[in-house]
Image (cartoon, rainbow, N blue to C red; front, side):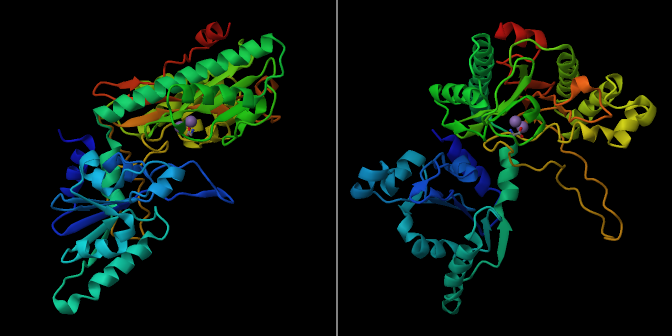
Length: 453
Ligand code: GLY
Ligand code: MN
Ligand code: MN
């Protein structure tokens, strides 16, 4: 049986063109401090094509479909300290590559793979020093031209091809992402319930207590990492978009915003929920919450195959802009109608980020946000129009994450000061709409209250 990885390698090879050779390194190990490393995380492109998670490995694919892996050689001494290595001998059968060698032979065995080829493909601007390595390998090939060897004359960005491939998730990727989202949803439920329980018991509840619950739930279901640094923001901290879980107390009467998701088997999830620390929304909190939720509902309704990537964002802006006027966060007298708010971008004072991003192996996944094939005008003195947003296709996965963040200001009703709300779900685009894979944690205000009771 051909593995999903072999199928992807074949699909990539078919796009390289005659004489094309693709070189894909995995991620380097990175020192954290002194002789301790950050937890190792493979490169997403490399993993997409191999399913191989060891460091210090390279994949080479030729246009004829031939694949060569370079990996750490077997070494009893090193394996006693660092763990079992697959090794080149087992790699051919385990990973289904056509050839495998020790990575120690990379500099001697890679240049011959480039001989008499026309184009070297590798991911541009993603691996520090890769361009130099490619130069050195090409230099070795060029040194042989007098013997009749032809040196590749073109270099092309492999990201362009791989990003397109990764943008539409196949059935196995979707299945993993559903599982990742379900684990993350359970973690959010656990954090909400812990918050209410600790406050009811009069305990000194802090942001990090909820972060600990998230990490516990991720790991006990086998997720390898958080997909990104968890945000647990109590009260006014929710208005800091890139806040981390810190030491602030969870206070009766205040909201908590949690933006956290696990990475499972190389795939990210990305969920945000905002809930009352004690389990009961106040009136103003509920008003603002319901507005954000209504804007998310509108965005979800706008997410389907054939729609553009920008449609959910536009739907969100319409609902939020009207709501900001209705709740007097923006004065009707000063700002006019929702159309005026949108035209003048007056909503930016409260909603300063986009509604969606692609989600996949990377939390902000690869893939162009504009429709491919858009060509800027030939006359560079003419300002180029905004390229049209990407048309959605079944299997694309995006987040839908509207929010409102209210900083204290004399122009804003005081009841809303320091409230920050975001609601974020993960959506797989289908032919007729989208599948929200993160709804294992509720979003309706009364359902959140019931869960925390
Ligand atoms: N957690 C990152 C994001 O929502 O984009
Ligand atoms: Mn997100
Ligand atoms: Mn998020």
